[in-house]
Structures are given as C-alpha cells and as structure tokens.
Length: 284
Image 1 (cartoon, helix red, strand yellow):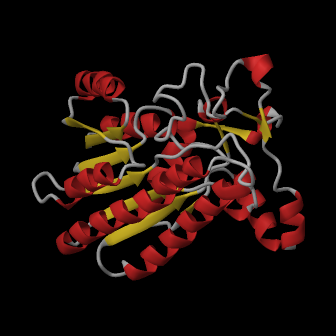
Image 2 (cartoon, one colour):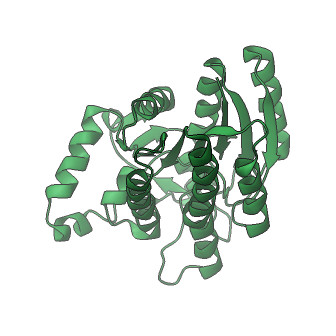
C-alpha cells in the first residue's frame, strides 16, 4: 500500500496515525526525537501489522536533522507516498517577555520543518505522479492565540497554496484543523482548558476523518460538525471579536500540578524530553 512518513510519531495524533496506517498495510517511516520510544513502537507495529517500519530519530528544531528527514523523502528507493507533518507543541509562555530561543525552536518545528519537508516530498511525488501531503494545523489557525495561532495560520494558508500548485500533478495537499483532542498535548504544554467534554474529540476519530479526506483529495479537513461550525463562525466574526477570545488558553498552576519546570516548559512525564518539541500536535 505504499510508505507513509510521520513526524511527531511517538505520541498523540502521530501515534494514532502510525497505528491506523499500519493497520491499512502501509509501510512506515517514524520520526521523533525519542529514539527508544520509536523503536518500541516500531516493534509493536511490525508484530501487529506485519509492515516494514523504519525509525528516523530527528529533532526538527535542528536544521541538520530536518535535512536528514528531507533526504529520506527525496529517496527513490521505497519512496514515501504520504507525508504527515504532525510534529508540534504548545508553548507555556507569553510572547512578550518570553524566551526568544523557545519561540524560535517552535517556529522551526511548526513552520520551517513543514516548509522543508513539504518541498522535498512534493518534488519527489510530482515526478512519480502520485502522492499526498497532510499537514496538521489547528482550529487555532482562525483565532488569535499567540504565536501558536500564527504558526497554524501559516500551515493552513501554505497548504492551500500548495494544493493549488499541485493541481493536475496526481499529488494532493490536505491541512488538518482539529479542535480539542484527548491526548497529552495540554498536559505537556502546561495549559489548562476548562472546556466541557462536548468540546473534545478522540484521536481515533480525528485521524480516521483526516485519512478519509486525504483519500478524497479534500484540501481543508476539519473533523466533526461542531468544529466545522466553529470554523464557519470564526471566519464570519469581526476580527475584534476573534481577538477578544484570543486568551482562551490558561496556564496550569505549577504548584497545584507539578507540570512545569523553571523554564516554563512542560515537565512531569513528557515523553520526548523537556519542552517536547516534537510532541504530537493534537489540539488547539
């Protein structure tokens, strides 16, 4: 069924993408900083699904690591037919007064890596005349919640433009814009979201909807009627009203939860190390 490369594959939506694609008999290339966790996952996927699984440890905030992943996407041996740009994370800081190096790393992971890897994949796929690129953004792309919204707005617009450019090449581009999803995302980012259960989606249904939209060539994939409604309202509201909602995120009290270290990064049981810069990007 071809080969799929997934960034941020060790947790959250990335982990769910890996399982669903393996179950559908796709060979996989798994990308994350945590080599040990990736190897465990690869062993489980090989045993359960009988597919070929490559492990490619990489920190997508490091240019040399991004280039190694890009080289795998350009390869003509066991070519990648589906790229899932999923890696990302939330920042537990405000931009003004926050650590600039932390902001730059987030930009590199959620914007620059998407640009470089999409370029590598689109080039290889266009020559072959088939393939798909799935970039994970967020419903936050339509809001005004700091640099995270800015990153995701870029991913959304970039993917739309890429879809236009790829028309009639046999290659498609889809941007996934989920809302709140039950994963480790908020805990690892040190973010508290006091929204009711009805606002939350499960990772399995989000990934299934995204892959179905990729198969149909849908450009903007927004899982669930409730978030398609939210997206429609956000596009119609005056931007002043959208900005008024921009501070919907609320830091978790570190003394109450123990989830934050002195640097403002998510701690506790973060699976990919402090700051988790390739954590699965899975919620607004």
